[in-house]
Image (cartoon, rainbow, N blue to C red; front, side, top):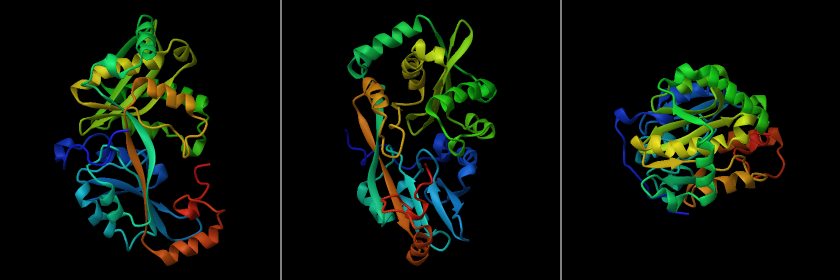
Length: 317
């Protein structure tokens, strides 16, 4: 693992508002809550009604919280104290912060959450990617055509087809599925890059990346059964390392899915074949109103849990 806390680029300009920083992305996940801009740092959270109460809490947009100026995040957090019971989020592992900075903002929870598998695209491919993955990608490319779509919103029908395969393969429950309307917005986000693979004209796989701050984040990918047989995801990721290098220094393959990453060893090994380098995303939580928080926990009666906020224990089941 490399140091994930003394990062990267400093405050970004409005011209750099792309990918997870862009308001269109926050609007795409409104099924989870109402978008609220953090005006000082330039990030977005979602405000949610807490079931069985008139209170609100906040969460970062899935899968991670990004902002333009991490040094100002503490001001935004302080200004939420009269509106929310609590706030929780997962940090961008490429954010320009230190662990001390996070603890000054979030007084109740700052813990390492996931290791994100990251590829330095300036390093020689042979020194980063395993021999198995290199050979598998090259064999796949002998059978497949991988292209970048010039206008991602026009690929919506194809994207929904591929996403349907991902839903079935990974048994994504309806509450966690994204709608066609959500993806229509995500494909239109500035900085969105969409790669797709075909076999004799048949769509077999696709991957959506979001680019900002010199990083290409592997947001979602999907593959048909035929695509898995043809190792299409290897072909897409390999080709992406060439195509995305015009906009990004780093490719973030993201972490292993799930809250505790159990049962996902095959995914971990797949990502380790692409890179041994990781950066840490942190889970952060802050309680603004301890009395209301205690009231909600008492009403919810959760089991002994480390889940935050405790009154939402089981929401991701």
